[in-house]
Length: 287
Ligand SMILES: C[S@@+](CC[C@H](N)C(=O)[O-])C[C@H]1O[C@@H](n2cnc3c(N)ncnc32)[C@H](O)[C@@H]1O
Image (cartoon, rainbow, N blue to C red):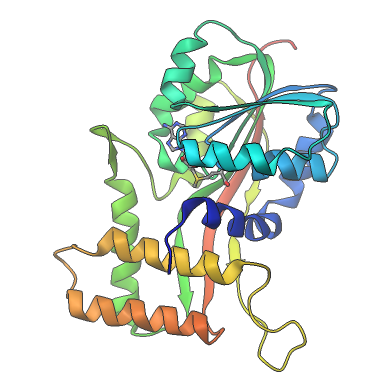
């Protein structure tokens, strides 16, 4: 397979559409100010802005989306071109921490969005910096925060499956970016205490698990929906890359395991579940 990150983010959209917690999503709609000034960090190829426009959460808005990968922002520019001109877009390829430094002291945003992003960060260190961008009383929507469960069915070997899940999560916990810790395999559940410690109010929270499965071959809509076969191939390849040199694994056995998982995808047999949590909240102060 070709390991193409923008393609993965595109394939992920329908998986996220099903996963997003419906209660938290509707609470976002109810609490969005009219004509909001929105900032999305780690925005990838812009699927969240697209979703908010498609579902008419926003019609007149200013939407700033940043991501540190220029190829993601280039894809977002093309993808979001059809959005109505009443949504004023500003897309920038910039590292989050450079952006925060540029904007220091300017609390200009009504709404802050981080979707499938904060679990890649050192959350307690990042949240105060992120909140420094939000107006008093501003809204935040933090969705798809991974929370410690990766399930692949059917089982290949119970002991090996469990070991691979545990080691894969450990790579998230031990991940370093620029020498700094960045990631938490239980970032979803830990978000409650991180937010409360900063004095943020949680308006809604709920699970947003990815659940991906195929219809059997005889079914009219056979196979995985939309581009979700690629999504699964990418996930399995990500696990492969994360553990490809891990000393605790017999690498020949692991390579066979990966090949079996890819074969299960080809046969439409693989079921993938990742447990995640969504949050909507408010930063203290009057709007
Ligand atoms: C898992 S992806 C999610 C992207 C998008 N929110 C989505 O769900 O389609 C995480 C994104 O964060 C971006 N990213 C990671 N670290 C970043 C940083 N320090 N500053 C800005 N973007 C970052 C990556 O380039 C990637 O596009």
